[in-house]
Length: 482
Image (cartoon, rainbow, N blue to C red; front, side, top):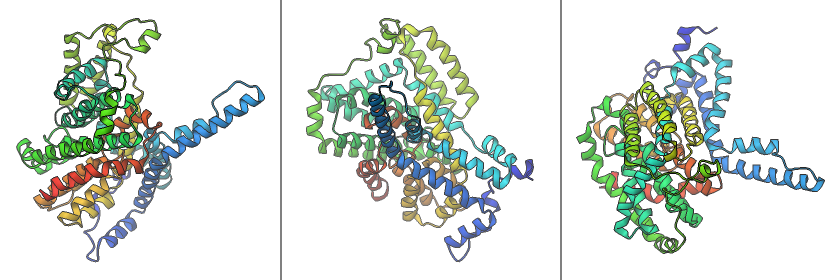
């Protein structure tokens, strides 16, 4: 029987494990499994959840096939078409954003069987911090509102005007200037704005699948490294800034020019590779401007939306600033969001219909990820501690592909006596690997949620890795070789 004291001791604190075994890393991990066998169970479930994310596109394809066969059968026997239960279940399994949530149920059942319900309940409610998931939900919802998109499009349009406002100019501006905004308005907000602008100014024009994936991979990598110009916006740096005493000048002096070089170099490389297709896309019909009537609004009988006044844009910007400044205090930024919903309703003639589906799914994805990730410290911390500087950089980048990079940097703060060069290496590796998978960086699920419709509903993981490889290698050169 587990009581409150026992429940509060789960997972086993890293300080309670014996010192690293002299015989090596494998023995250290073996000792930790022997001390707490549930470590292996939790990591096994986490591994299955990761495999599930890689198989998500396959589940969606199977759902389509099952529904297609059900529709054909209904037509043959003369019955009306209806959603097939098997197809709906497969579609649920194919939603990347729900994978970690589904496997949290498995984890909860296993934990209850092993330690009792009291421990499972305590860990889920008191042992896991959901602040980041809540913040991403709020900032994604705010950043996707019509006034903010109008403001972002106007600002980015000024940059694109330097290149004649062509599709290529919009593409280049959004993938360079946009990710750098993550150092000011946070990476999730920058990802949301960039994805929305790319959706309107680029993906709607029907680029090739190869260019689509190249764009997505470049976006993910540049957003991951683009937030490193300050110490308060990118979660991987935010996790270490206070424990390690990193201030704005320290972060800017080390990451600043390297980050700028990486962002612009990667974009220019892909621009040169795809310059012909980007030029051809310019000749295609332009997308509908943000100031045009919202189709959903017209269909609902609300008529033409009015042009957004400057004061409404300013109020939206203030609500976003409030959320960013108070991003560590859920009561404040969630409370501000509730006030914002009232303002949204009061100014509905100037607002497009707000859909909370994508922000909710992304928040759910990140909540599930932190539930599983919180049980992986038993092996990640000793792995990081066992590596020297260069292997630490690449090890951090590799681990990031299968965990949120903020988790990697947080666990590195628990490793005692790390040198300054090792600290830099682990953070550099974490942000460098942040574009390799959807789960590697907290803003990536937001990008997938917005742009997934252009990839058949789900992004193919191996295609994403291939697309992100070039900008990732550029980041390696900038951070390690220069």
